[in-house]
Image (cartoon, rainbow, N blue to C red; front, side):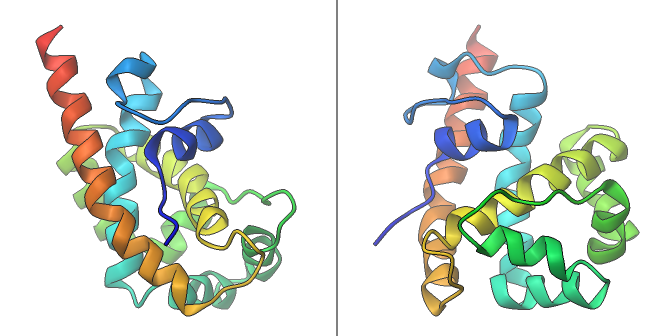
Length: 158
């Protein structure tokens, strides 16, 4: 069973290549650290809202069908903006997440706008949305949470 791996996922989101392994060894700081902390929340949000297919449907219902189709397809991902994130996720959830992470809400929106397309993209590697996408998400989440936690500890020690 394939799993999402934090390093390559972050690299794709941030637009640079990163190897697997401990996040701290990747020398991650600044925005990358925020995106890393945000990933488990984004993945949990997908799970809480019915899985990958249901989340894609929410975006489609708000007029983002073309973008979501590109996330599943094997080509480049079309971007969404902060407004799309706010429309689909909701202001209350974004405020809560901003407070939990201790970062400005605008950054949360920007980083979710970058992260969600890439999470979906990596959960649909053959360009098809199947039941295995939700299974892969569930299987990947504990490892990503653990890697983010380990990176936090490593950063606190330095």
